[in-house]
Image (cartoon, rainbow, N blue to C red; front, side, top):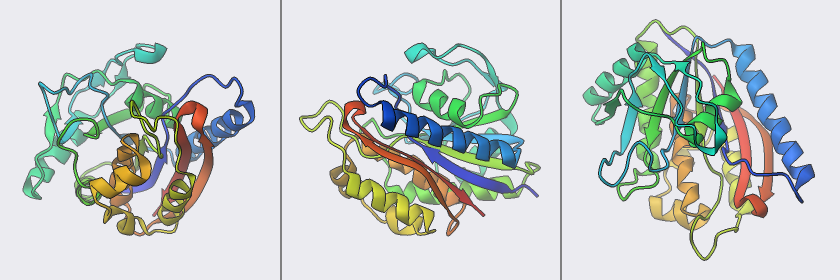
Length: 267
């Protein structure tokens, strides 16, 4: 019987620290605390949930949910990320897609994906070792068919079922993206600190199910079009419903056009 031994989430925005040196140092410290916490759990597989930035999935190839089903992955290499291959888990990716189909979810099984900066920064923060098996889960937050937060949360529960029925003894789920940020809109640079702190508070208190009841419209109004990435966080929380945890860091950084945060949930 497999088990999920921890869930984590972190922003994946990284910009130069000029003029925000102190805040950037606190963010980096929080990210390294998250990495250390993942390492202590000694996972044998890492599931990374994120959105694709119109690189693998585009308007001509739209998805709502997808999962990688490859033995290894080659990063796209955007934002200067090294193109170092890393191990995948075809077995878990396939088991998840198949089980999801029995639970009312059409999850695209994608073998030929090149993880971009969103997936890779999240993965590198959590576990840089290329030998650790990784399953990339894609949740659309960029194209027209954006799933409701509740749907992402419920899909996380489906992943937990798939892992529980398999041999993956120590799985860790990591979500990337968020918190509040507006991109390519008149509000770009705005950060909704009050919403971000409320979101982190409820997540850490085991009350993610309340946040999952937000509609797409409500989430976008509070956190921006970039804040729709918080569906990734709710997917992670769905794998550990009612789990409590801790916030590793939070810094509102308008210069980075993002409310930067990270947390952990433990069963």
